[in-house]
Amino acid sequence: MADAGIMGLGAAVIINRQVVWMQGYGFADQPRTRPFTPHTIMNVGSIAKPFTGVAMMRAVHEGKLSLDEDINTYLPFRVVNPHHPGEKITLRHLATHTSGITDRWEVYSGTYHYGGDSPVPLGQFLEQYFAPDGKNYSRENFLNARPETQRDYSNIGAGLAGYIVERAFGEPLNAYTRKHIFAPLRMTRTGWFLSEIDLANHSTLFVSQNGHIIPIPLYGGTTYPDGGVRTSVADLSRFFIALLNGGEYQGTRILDARMAAEMQRFQFTDANRPENFPAQEGNSGLFWRTKFSGTRVGHGGNDPGLQTEMLSDLAREVGVILFMNTSVSGPDQRAASVIFDALWKYAESLRAGGR
Image 1: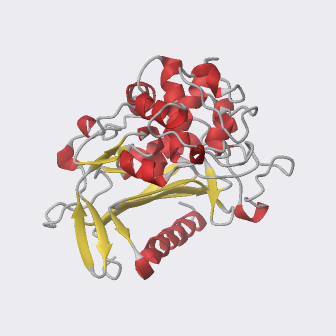
Image 2: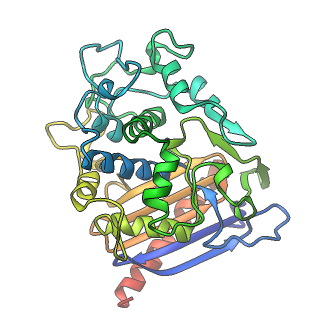
Image 3: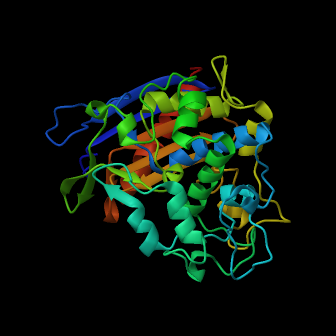
């Protein structure tokens, strides 16, 4: 941490779907008066996508959505790839990042709102991005590729999936997940927006550059279903265990077991594997993916001022959660993987010792 200029971090080790170790290190503020603990709140970047995925699968279970229906069935505006106008885009494509939708950076960078929650409604942004008469519309918002043929990680595509879920349930995603995920799991330090969080327990975020640790303002995102969740290591462990346990945590079910299995089922086969995602790269569930050459599965997050991981082995016997309230550039970027590897080795030693 000192070598890389990491201000604070928290972590948990999960063995056989039970937390066996949690700890925090460093600080959650610039004056270094607040220790970073497993109960410190911070935004977790793209680890938000599995929350969107669970809400999506709940809608599928209730018959409100289909994974393989044209998404235009559910939208008040049309989403059509101008390079392949005859091809439908589905929720399964959005959730595996094979829809052909791409994040045009000059637009997507403007979705970060420093100093507070985004004032731009999610639906308004999406319509302006996808409708041909929208101010942010461009043919460059899409790949020149048919769905399933190319994997291109799309935050805007995830935001679109979240918006479809909102329309299916008739309420905002933050409100729906609070009632059906956060509250049942007793995730009392979790929300999507700064306005929903006890800011006294929210970590400052930092950028480490050339030996300097620089605090940055907290921010919100317009496409919040792609990365807006704010939570703690302790809270997130409950959600992660529920997913590893077929949708249930200590007797509380947040997702039907069949839906949890489909969300985590590897979607790519020899018949439909994206051309740019060879087998040695791993595979993808629905807002759920492999990392480390296919050896671990879950999700991670990277955003200004943060790096996070929520990963298990493929047998779901070992899991590690890591929060860092500092984004690191240059050669020090490897610090996150070094720390994660150390945690993983510790987890495996606990499993070997019968913990």
